[in-house]
Structure formats: C-alpha cells, structure tokens
Image 1 (cartoon, helix red, strand yellow):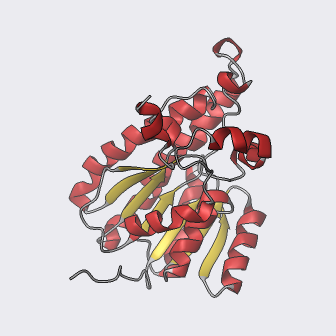
Image 2 (cartoon, rainbow, N blue to C red):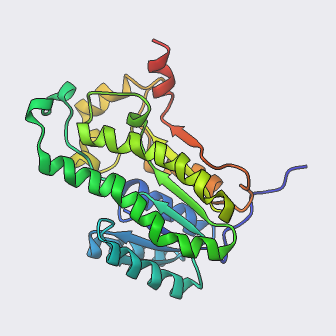
Image 3 (cartoon, rainbow, N blue to C red):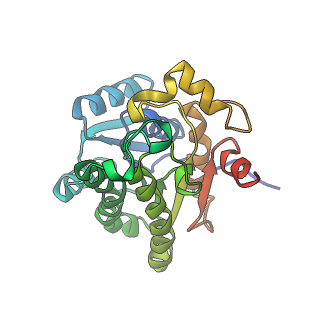
Length: 266
C-alpha cells in the first residue's frame, strides 16, 4: 500500500529567481509543504516583499538579494540560508531571463544578433546554473540526501523561432548539464533533475504571454488548449523535492500541456 508523500518539515531549501513567476510558485509550494525556504532574486526589494507575503501566510521564508552571475553573491546567500535553517537539502536553480523575441516572432535575425544580449542571457541562464550548483554542493553533500532541481524550458527540447537565440541555446545546454551533473554527483547521493516548462503565464519576456492576442496565439499550439498558471508547477516541484524520490536523477521533465509531443507528432 502506498503512503502519502512525506512532509518537507525541517528541510532547508533555496530557490533562485524566486521573487516572481515559476520561482515564486516553487517557493510557495515548498514552504506550504513545511520547508524553510530562502527566496533569492537579483531584485532584493522584490525578494523581501515576496518573502514577507509568504511569511504572512504562515510560511518560513526569507528573501535575499542574490545575483547568480556573481560567485561571491551566491556564496553569501547560501551561507546565510544554511545558518538560518541549519543546512540546505534542496536547491532550485531557477533564475533565468529572456533573450527577447526570436526571428519567427518579429525579433532579431542571426545577422542582427546582439553580442551583449547573448553574453548576458548565457551568464544568467547557463553560467548562473553551474555557479549555483557549485556554491550549493557542499551543503547538499552535508545533508546526506541533497536535491538539485534546474529550471529549463520546452524550447530546449523543441526548437522554436518564437524565442531568441541565446535563450534556446542556454536552455538546451542546461538539459545536457543536468545529466552531466547527475552522473558526477551520484556518488555523493545528490540527485539532479530538470523541469522543462512550456507556456506559463509569467513576467519573463516582459510578460508577453499575459497579452491576450499573444496568449490566444500560443494557446492554439498547446494540445491542452491553454497557457498554464505558475501554481501548476508546484506539485511537480514537490515530487522532485520529496524524500520519497530516491531513484530519479538525470531526468528531464516536461510540463507543457503536450506542446513538445504535439509538435513532434506533426
């Protein structure tokens, strides 16, 4: 007979890019399940405001300013969270930024590619992930059952000209990095998995999916016929975070309403 999923009470967790969108939803899901969560974001006031709202709901959450492109910033935030919670067992490397519109949706072509934009997106979406993992690893090993979960995108699996070059490239690299780290860290009993969200209503890319005309267009490409609410990522995040998950590592989990499967079938 199966038993209910174990609570996360007593678990120290950390979420980068946690002030809004999927990061905020993941933070809330973990905290409501009993975890103590450090909500990190490059926007310090936004991180503190989001944390305060969750504290008002009875959650144990702290908001910290952190730039995932700066190793010292990550190290300081990790140390603060570990001291506050007595360790860190869960880390969600979720911070990410848009590269702007792709050439298939009115954005820049390859010949117009902006080098500064390319460098900035890869610095956050790819280098930020490896730096987050590196800073977190001592704490995850010390916990004895560490979990590293990385946020990617369905655009990493299914090439689409709707997103910019740097976004597509960075997220595809994150998929490979997930499996690489899963192999490397297995000896330390640290499980590494990746979430690949499809269309969610968030503020990334200036909140384009909140615009009715764009939302309608994108929803038509989703087999389920709609765009997801950020809260819908929570249950999957909890599955990967749960102590019950002891044998899943190196997995790439699509949460996309069938978008990738639907496009592959055409």
